[in-house]
Length: 109
Length: 116
Image (cartoon, rainbow over all chains, first blue to last red; front, side, top):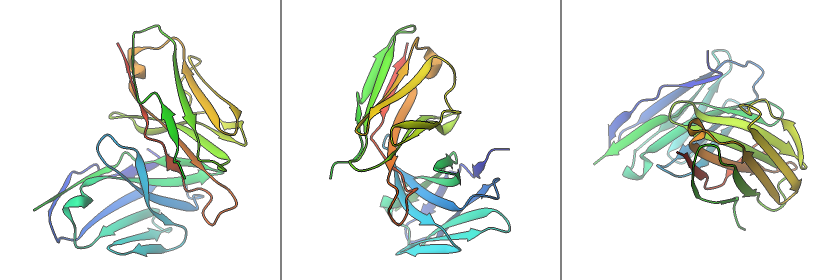
């Protein structure tokens, strides 16, 4: 089993839709979690950090469920510009961070 | 402030050749990470440094790979000899302790390596 697992998608949604991604992690000792956004042929860029139960930033909400060992990312009112790959990551101790394979999102007009 | 700088951005080489990838972290950052990304394996951590000292190199695939950090502003990842299966995008990232979220990593633009 991979340490961090994501549904690869792709998710195809219309503009304005709400979309949610889930990510599971296997290391129960993980304390920090992240969602990164990666555009095609670009580097990953931090979207949100999650250190407690959740975090919200505008249209984006991340939730952490420690009992079930998953984190989710909710995107409301999807924009065309939200089309990207979303990488989930978990800090497994020290500064070692393990990334999921990513979930691809396509937002269509 | 300049972000993480990597060079070269693209590298095409032939099997058996030595490849050196370079990284300059964000000034003041004391952690530096090297990752490799492929379609098949995703983003994999190869090695990371703290204050120029290698902390965890368990992700380095084999002895053909080596990484150094001679000072706080420069790191190299070397592959010798290179093989076609090393073809990937190699990212360098850095982070800084002493901030609110020390484990937030900032990635460079990557080096796209093709080994023929």
